[in-house]
Length: 422
Image 1 (cartoon, rainbow, N blue to C red):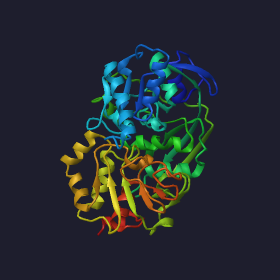
Image 2 (spheres, rainbow, N blue to C red):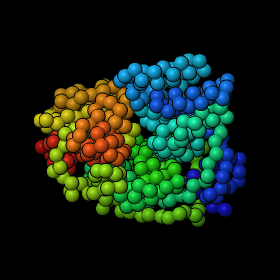
Image 3 (tube, rainbow, N blue to C red):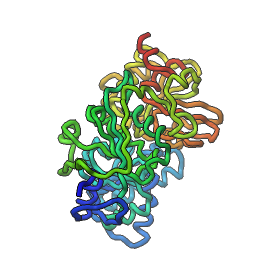
């Protein structure tokens, strides 16, 4: 029987000829990931049951990304637990501050995720990895602990939803606008426990960086995963990096979907998610002119080189608006180094931005840009629920790096064309 790409990957890892939505299966896992918040909990559970070793040490990555350099004693202790475990088990893929970055950008960059994989991450945005044509999903720390011991986990096979984008992107538009639009159309629960499959000529032309952005926010619609079928563009990215063999899958003609949505990308344009939910999405003109206190360019959604290049293109030779602060955080140490070599860090610095080494930063309301009561922030991150980036009464708007850069220069939500032409 015809299967979707997601069903094919799950079937292969369950050693079954076919699977169907709703079926309970046990799957082999290709890569596991924990960070400085989730890994310590998993480690405690791992040790509580007396486990002696990780099922395969080279299949586990621990990435310190949320609170490094440590912001307080509690954070330092969290990181210490992870470091001690990595040393004890001689983990090859342990990424500390100054050598790592945000896990969801780091793992693809390092070739630890390849097409056809099943990747289990103790972080909800592990759906990002689907941009490489694999099944990536987030789990809790106790599930990670069990997977660290056994190398397996169970799934209920999800239904698939197809999101087909045709035509051409509007000027300045990007994958961030496509996914915000999709979430705005179906709501934050519109894809609950379903695989969001992105297709169409627009998606096929997207570089890998933007495909990862597209899949990153699947969880904001409740999705179990997001996925883009791997192709030659994917392989150009994967081949120089891959630490393991890969396998390409595509959906069969006639595969069954929960639903299919088709949109003309040229009519979507720039989108902004307004407080207090990622599905409160409006076209940029409807919110243009709203004044902001802070702009954040970073996070696992939009902190790659392509994102920084777009922001720098707009901000070059300009200054951050008076009484506005702009925080720029490259995704990984390697991205920071490349941005430094290309002169992007200099552009941001001369514009008056605060620049940090690779970290999640203010995205989760942890530190390095937390918002106070009534403050307004335009962010390239993925969530804007009350309290996500600080005080529950702070207001967070979500948009692309192009909109963020333009907003930083004018101090109010602005179309990038208005700044780029000046």
